[in-house]
Length: 376
Image 1 (cartoon, rainbow, N blue to C red):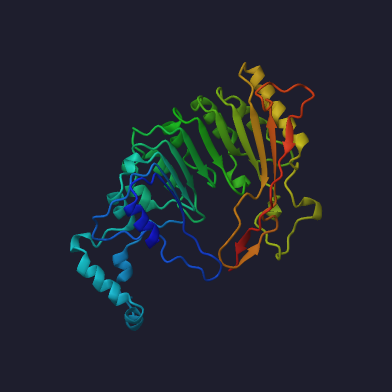
Image 2: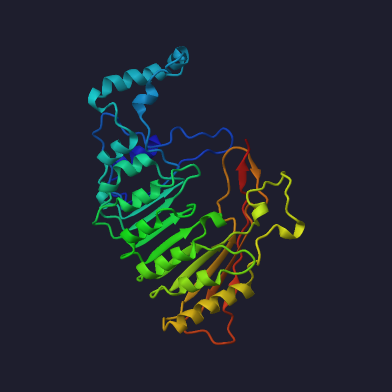
């Protein structure tokens, strides 16, 4: 982190930063979970246009971390350089700045109004939402990912508190459960985006969109050209939901995500007993090229009935699209890493419409990854 921090301080021509802070194996802890800004201030970063952060912790105070533990631990504090760090901060930092946390220091050090693209993975801190929005005046592309134990109101609060000057071209809201607050978010942002993603890397019924939410998209976000959404199925394909999706006037392409596991298999590990019958471990019907073509043709027919231009493409996903786990020991989930993908296109590579005999939908080869769930 120190080397990256120094590089940003000394290179004024840097325009983008993609930073992931994570555990590696059982013992590979990062030196810290954020950039080491000087608490006394006076540092300056280049005005980034693109920023992607994964696992970054804004709500952290070097001054608080340097204090000895309240109950005991004074010898450890001295022996492991805690006292040395405390004295250094005490001498270097004016008293009126010692309360500042990492985000406040970064807001001082960089012109956030120049930021056009922001992606926050692995959760969004309430502290970020409390302080950052007024500084994000030039934002055009925003992607946020809901954390496992995150307050469900945090992301809607971020999206609805952005300055009036912000007119997003693309919005991605990933891994939410039920998308609480979606109506307020669409009320604020639906006039400008060309692309909206409301999906999950591990699709399930808890983050599938209701038909009423898709109706809102069609009514309020008529300029949308691309939509990505989780849809639920339970014995049949979600025809009403697909029909609602097809009513978005300017839609050009859509990505549809489906859960793989049946209800009794959801979240089950490889070593846990399951109540599922052998033929009841997957959600039905299973996604195939035939079914992808069936849904693609259905959407095209619905658009034809509404005198709307046909879609150029639809992509169908099923299963676990999480990245491989690199942290401590995890217990494999039953369907971890298992996934399929089908692409449907109405146009040839040269841009000409496909003929009746041309293949509309084809399976895309994807590599299965080994993802595991934390033990304990």
